[in-house]
Length: 215
Image (cartoon, rainbow, N blue to C red):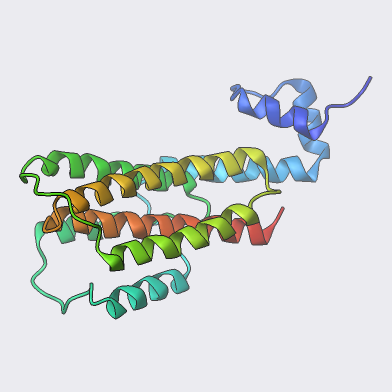
């Protein structure tokens, strides 16, 4: 009798059964690659279930690069009295490498808060997005191409999860950019846009590291 192959095992995982069939259990016990896949998925699921726990910080280079760019464009002002919105954003957890699903939760919270306040502002005449914002988006797009390329030969199930979260972040960015074009003075939309950019930078860093680490 032929033994189960790795691609067949991945199809079994996609069915999300409560317990693995006997043949799949035999395969994962003998296959190091598939055991690593199961371990990765278990780590993602565990982080998604433990939203109250403080996740690991993303690579320091991500924050340094973002801050340097925003300072060079004059988009970061001197510290001022912290408002309720800044305090709320500061309490949001940051996703780590194993917490790809956690980024989905963070961005969803941003979208809900954004929609609840968007209607408080009257729309103004459409204008072009500020060059600084467009420049930051262009830089992230270049990083995205590298991150996607690094994941090309990774486990399909994990890669699909990361791509799904990236799509959610991109949708949030598009929504904020549209509002900024219509309402360039909308500070709430501006804060959410920069927050979405940070979420995307974190997720791209996770994707790049996962691609570089390998199985």
